[in-house]
Length: 324
Ligand code: FES
Image 1 (tube, rainbow, N blue to C red):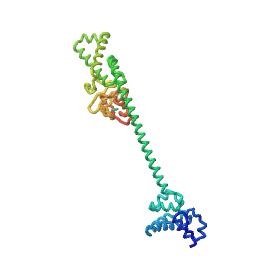
Image 2: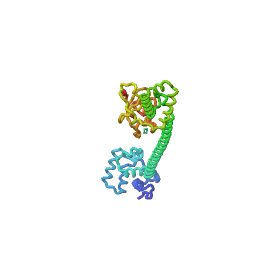
Image 3: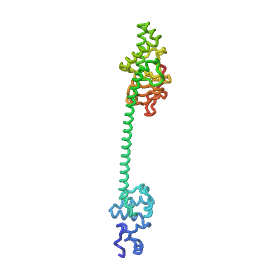
Image 4: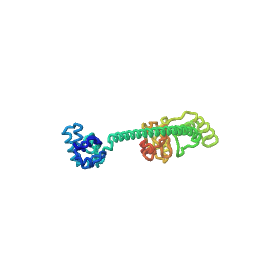
């Protein structure tokens, strides 16, 4: 034969070497790759023959190589990974070709490693996501705890402020709860009924400040002991024409599924009655501070002068201006 039979580098390489004249064989190092000038179709035919592919399949694959202008081994060698991806050959054909032109690169191993890295990346991402979720939940729990504390301090503040409230006839602009409004209203009613029953005592109470203050003090104590009146128990306001009955800042008036709230700027707004967060009744849990209506449950703040929008949580109670 005059050809070297014990060539290394696999059967394809051996077959190629066997096809070369002896001189050429000697010039090619055994351990080197297939020569650049070798025809890509020859390589494909040899691979196909080794694996008993049908001549039709081989022909089709050769046609694909030709269509992509891959005529020599060099053409295959310089092909980028992206180009390999885009060739319409079957994955196994691609792998075998690549392996043959670049035997030093273990594409199977490479693929496996790539897959593994992808899996690990996915796992890491999932872990990060879970960690973030847990952090968020912890933060929320902490927020809720703070809100509950605030709620407790607010209600304590309301109790402590009852005595001050009885001294002022008109509520000051600022924090006024519905409980305060209810108490004030009932105190006024009591005063009025007292005045009807006994005119002399009422005149004396209005003229002499010392006696009236002492009697109002005892009333305030009694009122403090009484259970708090909710907004839903408040009497409905009468004719809008009567300015004496118009609500002052901080007043909340339930109207079915909506409530009327008078803000610190003196404007009355109609808003949704139930908090968009946990559907708490704002007629009882609502607190007006300036132009903001706070839900006392978790302190969501709704800007009455901005359509009742809670910018922190992206929720609204659909506030619109009304003439009382
Ligand atoms: S129910 Fe949570 S803020 Fe109103």
